[in-house]
Length: 493
Image (cartoon, rainbow, N blue to C red; front, side, top):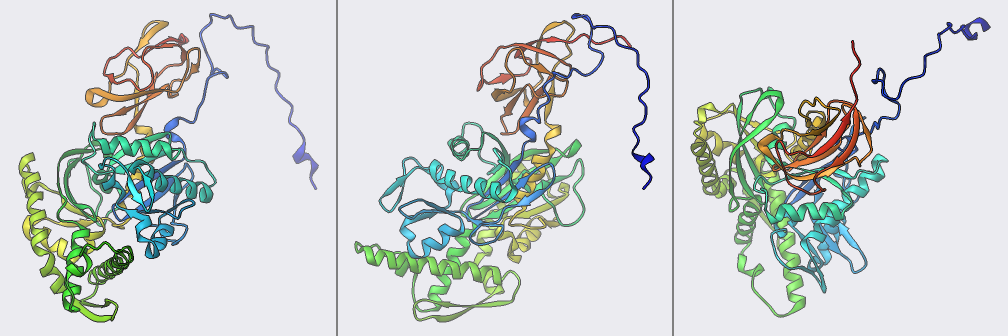
C-alpha cells in the first residue's frame, strides 16, 4: 500500500491576525449568529380533510411520503371517527367499527364544525373540534411512525368559503392545535388543486382556470388566475351544496330500492325501538356502500350489478341511466358556475381550461355537462382523490417564496417595518426574543395573512434584536413599526 497517500500536507504559514476592536465592522460571518432551520421549513403535513375521504402527505427536505391509513393500507382515509368506550378510533378503524356500531361513529367532520353544541356517540358527548382533533392527531402520529420525524407544522386545505371570521376556520385551527400542530397554514382547496399534478400541459402566467370540484359535500366552482411566479389569484367562487356526491349516492340508493321492490321510506321511518333503529342504520349503511360501489363501476363500465336488501335482489343500472338520473342536478350546478364567470366579467372563451376535481369528477356525466354548457377544454387532476393533498404538499415546498424583507434601514438602532401582501395580517408570532442575534435570511417572526398562509419576517441585514413592539397574536398592517434592532455596520469594500 502507498502510505504516501495518507501523509498530512504541510500547512502554509499564516500571519497572526490583530485583535478585533469591539466597535469594528463585521467582515466575516459571526459564529454566534442564530442559524435556525426556520419554522416554515420544518417537516410538514399536507392535509386534505374531505367530506368522505381524507389524505395526508409528509413533506421533508429529502422526500414526500404519502401516509396511508394504518388499517386499510390505502392513501385515502375515511373521514370517520368513532369511540369504542375506551379510546377513539379513526379512519379505517372507525369505518370498520361503525359497521357493527353505527351509533358510536360519525363522519362528515367538516360539516360538523359549523354546528353548535356536541355530537353524541352513544352516551358520550363530544365537541366537533375534539372529533376533528382525533383525525388530525391520528394522521400526525402515523406520519411520525412512518417518517421518523415529529411533524408539528401543517398545511391544511380548506373549502374556499372558509374566509376570515368564519367559525369553521377558527375551530379547524383549534382542532389542529389540540392535535399538536403548532404552526398551521390554510390553503383554499381549489388553489391546491391547481398546484397539483394535472393531465395535459402545464398552466402558465395569465391563464384563467375554472375549477369545478364535485365532492361529497357539494359542487364548488372557483375562478382563478395564474400570475407571475406560479402564484394563483382567486377571482370568485360559488358553492352549490345541493349538488354533491352524497346526493348522487342518495339518488342511486333510491333507485336501487325502487328496483328491488322497496322504497326510501323503509330506511327513514322513525321508530322508538332501539334494536330496530340499529337494524335500520346498518341497512342504510350497507345500501350506501353498494350505491358508491355502483357509481365507481359506472365511471368506467357501461353497466353494473349490485345485490340489494336482505333478500339480495340483483339490481342492474347502466351508465346511460345514471347520466339521466343526475343530469338535472349537474346542469343546475354548471349553471351556477357560469354565474361565477359573469360576476367576474369573464367569458367562457377566455378560460384556458375547466379543471375537474373531487371524487365525483370521475363520472363521465360531469365532463359531459361542463363541455355542453361551457364549451371549453376539460382537464383533470392526475389523481382526483389525492389532488388536494398533493397540491398542498407543493405549496408547503414553496415556503422560500413566502418571506418579507424589512424596509431599507439606515441607522444602527432602527425600527423595522414590512410591506404585508394585501395590506394586513391577522396573527403575528415572534421567533426571536430581545437580545437575540439574527442573520440576513433568518426568520425573526411570522405573520398569517387573511388567506391563511404564513409568511416569514426577515431583516435582510445582520444585527441584534433589541425589542419588539407588538405581542404575539396581534393584527398587523403594512408599515407598522414591529421591532427595533441594532444593525451591524457593513464593511467598506
